[in-house]
Image 1 (cartoon, rainbow, N blue to C red):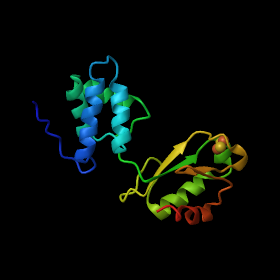
Image 2: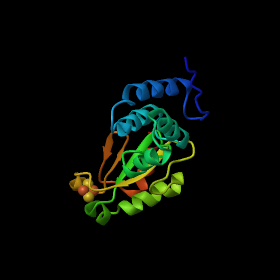
Image 3: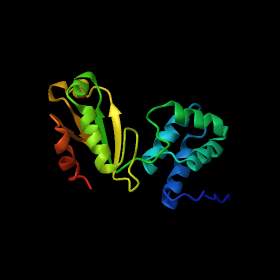
Image 4: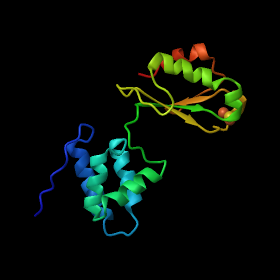
Length: 164
Ligand code: FES
């Protein structure tokens, strides 16, 4: 019987490592399944810390560089932790014209995050995204699953204060 020693990482609990072991066991003999293993691992942990990518590589019998290559190539993977609430601010043309940049700078001033950043306490991640298909409501952002339109820069903080 082999005893698996899990790496130490503050964001990955023993229970999560056990689940990742199960995922690796399930997929390791299936060719080309590294994307599935990374996706399921990310679903468990929330993102892909470096030791987790190394662990998947060893478990799948693949070179680390190959698994890193996959993890960094696809935008669905995140190598950085994300906030509890993801703010998706639309930077498409209609929203741009209607002032999404001012909305984002109010968010930056209040919470200290610019596009691509996550707050240290992981409350918010701010992402800029392409047209959300709600141009009639420009400027628009989605917070968690909620859509907020016709945003006024000086009201955006009031909206966000409801998300703890
Ligand atoms: S440009 Fe923002 S919703 Fe279309």
